[in-house]
Length: 326
Ligand code: AVJ
Image (cartoon, rainbow, N blue to C red; front, side, top):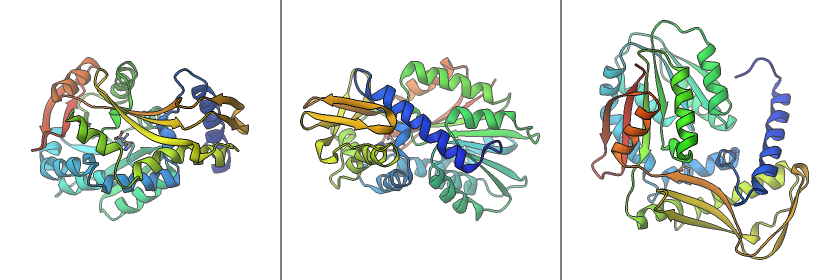
């Protein structure tokens, strides 16, 4: 949420950032695109569909844990007056958690930070049905949204921050560490952070989660090219690219790529992109790191948080970790 700019100039800013990132990342070696650009209106809808796929177990596993341990989480968090969720998506998880916290005396301010305005609209509508809540949306990157939340004079209670859905998995270790330190800096003493992280599991299961038999994840991945063509006046041939998923065991991450099926020209007018892509060359579009439960705690402690409690589902597929700001 920004009061300094009109909606139209915010859209222009966002398009300029997108163009600059497409130019920079597509010409890096290896070629890549930042995964946050998946989430335009169609991409957000495709992601919601992914969460319904029987092969993508993250969402259901996490919601099960939130339903089961929500009250315990609030008991640890103390007198919460504010919740902040980064990458709130459709708001379903935040809603599950707030509902688990009943009965509730205090008014709760819910801050939703997401790059997708459509997702924020949908989430606001879903959360509006709860009573005793005030919703504030931040259509921005995590960093910008957190700075906005940190600059707000707080109402005296504690903040429970949420970083769910294994969104942490999009960061490699050094970037994730810097990000988590910044996150901690935006919180105050006595505040808590709940992190959802997907766990290492057999390769076959990991690959099915990101290369589903219905092709929804392939559509989600290739939509990035659709978005480039539409918003940046590109001429990329969709049929020239295939969805590829790799489990990189050494790095403990699932990688998504777009593979060029032939030698082809890549032309994107508004991003000053014009080069030849060879057959078999790939654009790396996402990393989804997978963790061991102890690894999640270690990563959070390294960033200066204090471990409070961790919950893992019965299938050992997903972990919720609650940490505090000492
Ligand atoms: C929302 C980033 C956690 O990495 O699992 C789902 C996105 N990509 N299927 C993930 C995603 C392909 C998802 N995160």
